[in-house]
Length: 316
Ligand code: UDP
Ligand code: MG
Image (tube, rainbow, N blue to C red):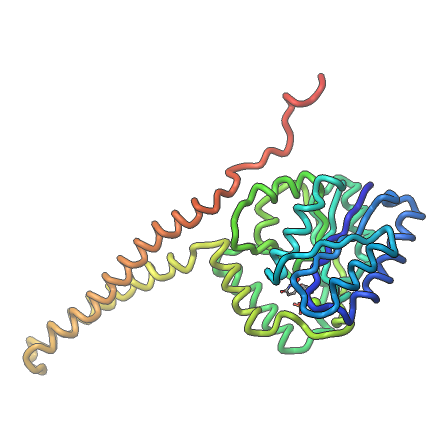
């Protein structure tokens, strides 16, 4: 099996050499054990780093046959860097594993991923078995992230980030998703095919700082929800209907008060119209939003289906 690993890097000069050393050792062993072929590769994608990352990558590619480099013209973010790597290499390899540069993902899980691929799985998700080594805050925010995502209608694999193996045909299918706003961990499950999960313990960042501070994580979550789901629009419609109902209640209450003579002139009509109008406006915005949501989904030009097998292609 001809394997490729794709590793996006943004200002990772502190960890890159260590990551490269460990991966090279891993490849030696995998090749020796006959699990992958000797023309397997590791591709580092430099996502417009401002430090010496690219210099290190280009040196590695000259010194060691396993390593190759890809340099983006500027910083485009983790998801774009990853996709650039995946789509560039997909036709040359049987399967591709994506992994972070900071050694948080356990490279020993690669063995299990390869085994699972050989058992016929097209997508193998690396799932964290625990987050004991993350800080309390990171653990809490990350877990809330998955829960809110699910509630908002954006299905993702729980505790899975972007450490995963994808076969060539799964990558061909991914290439058909032509959207620009990327949220890969939500898009990959949409592909389908036989998939599997491999559990691993997530470690601390080997060196350097996280490139995903809280602010970026929030915007990433928002990106995920708005790329995968139009559920927020449904929530607006529901709120609008609720407000209309409250408006009717207030109307009845205001009329009773009016007939009992407890009101000053104008109060009844004012109270009733504020709530009812607010409700009607919100529902109307929601309905318009629903159409915009549909237009949004159409503009993504996602594949309507992906064929897994076709007996017409088989020799009988
Ligand atoms: N990364 C990238 N471009 C960016 C930010 C991050 O390619 O704009 C890479 C980074 O080098 C790392 C991976 O994405 O390999 C995950 O980033 P990080 O480890 O900082 O995120 P965390 O694990 O803290 O969520
Ligand atoms: Mg990390």
